Image (spheres, rainbow, N blue to C red):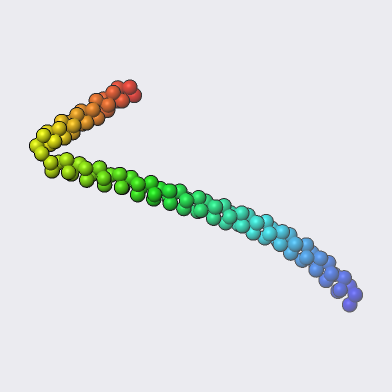
Length: 109
């Protein structure tokens, strides 16, 4: 009977050592997962702040563009002289765009 208890104690020691090793591995993995979850949370907060600032920027740009469209519409609806000036400005802007495009393409080549 004594031999059986002594052999069983060695198995218990072996199982305890294996359990400690597995517990240490599990603790390391849990620590890594906790760190990863913290990093994900921080990144999500940063992205939310970025999106909030973009939302306010888009709202201000929308307000600016809607005001410009209103002024443009009122200018188009006004007298014939304003329409002629508007036509000249539009043609001038298109020509300026093509001129800049040509210059930039020439510089890059």
